[in-house]
Length: 424
RNA sequence: GGAUGGGUGCCCGAGAUGGCCAAAGGGAGCGGACUGUAAAUCCGCCGCGUUUCGCUUCGUAGGUUCGAAUCCUACCCCAUCCA
Image (cartoon, rainbow, N blue to C red; front, top):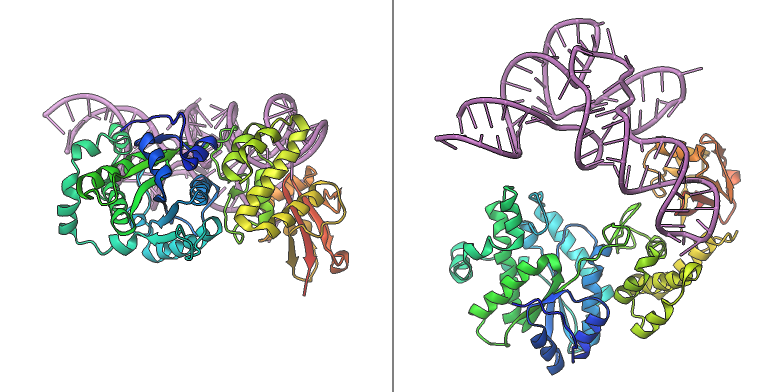
């Protein structure tokens, strides 16, 4: 197993991945390149159903899949309903809390639907995407059979040498037998897909290297050479220049589900990125051509705002569709451009009765501040503006008559903007 | 199993002669100013609430006391050393 940097890929697919910064390490870069060049490759990436929605942290994987599918390869989106019952110890210093099965199954379904936004599931196409849940085959496993068929190919000696387990052991932190099995299950997933779908490649974040390589080796041992050797390739761990993990913003995780994070807020997440990350984000999270990106990134200073707007628009378009992206862009210009027309800005409707400013800003759908106490302090320091002018009195009461047809323009802090309507 | 040290707010980490402790300091975060919805910088906030006051917090459960993060008891967990 090598960790070869791909110097000069011949296949368009690998070249595109490399050009856009998706390649960290590969089990056999030359062979992967050759496979991509030779014809359609079926590959898979696994997602943990730990929540009802994927978030921006999953985007690297999603965009890589999308890119490969566009180069004619076939993606399998595996949602780990089975492995979630175990909990991946990778990168964790502590055991994850166990999730109950109903929650897992609900998450699997929700995440499966989200994959449709990034991948093409049109079955008339030869490389249409497939969605699978490893609970389908893992939960039915017989313990003894599994041990005889799969367990026999693993040595504990080798397993405890891998980074994931090594770290736990070195730090003398408990590693339950349950978790220790995670790697076998993921390796088996790969084998299962190799046999059932002709899947010869697994991609994933760099933290998955150990689990992925375990699958590659398992296939080499038992998979015969049905579809040739299997490979894996990892993506770099994406960190923002300010050190924050990709996918976290001031108001929490950047969910891909519009119900959990509005397209407007999603757009804002990209617009407010650090200058230093613009190029990297454009490459990975938009479909803009590499050459054009290089051109765009020649912009400096305030001109970068335009580039960020482009980034935000393109990224939002992929996740929420063109219409939503247009609307988010319009809303952003309205809300942040000093306009009095906020017609595109998200609106919330409050009951038709007098309401105090303090209660308004902590309203369930606004939640500009985390508590009333915070809200009071922020209001008093001038953080809240109504129709463009600061309102310093938390107790200021709004009567139904104060709400115009198109709503009150509420501005709380740097990012939070809403139109507030009073409805009946 | 034995010995010793320790468990403090989102994180790190002071505080242990009982009151001046909602708890130093740093980081993160938030708000304001300046800007470009960026960065840096400066200022402010940073448990919650019906806010010149009230309530709930310093591993868990009790106890002593007018009063406990600080003392006592039991329990749980962690670190290091011994077996």
